[in-house]
Length: 145
Image 1 (cartoon, rainbow, N blue to C red):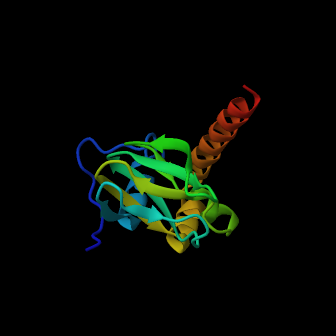
Image 2: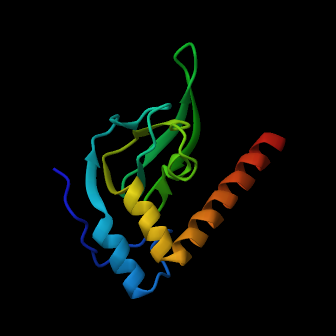
Image 3: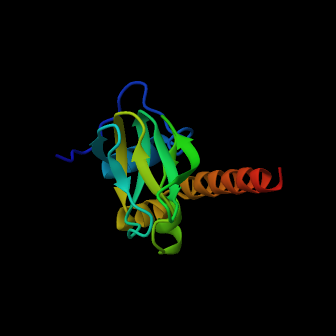
């Protein structure tokens, strides 16, 4: 069952940290809880990108499946981090498969609500752009190393 998110005392993510109280309340009002067991797939590469996910608890793997069944692990995502933003921003399909490496507690926001929130809370857009820039620089460094 999906529920509205309530702010636990220690809740912080790279997106929510530093938002003004009205922006935080707007974000929290739109988030839904999702739980995944270890090994459960959150989404597959090629799926439609309809949600942004914030990790409250646990770790997950972002992988690209190979043609012969092997996986290339792109990154491990943990508490306070977010994922799934690329497909929301460009409208394309999911670029990787994401599965729970441990039991997961996620907060999820849908496509329409995400864009409404970006219009209402411009600092949120800046945080997402900075995170994407950091990920791109990290990917470039890995390729050139």
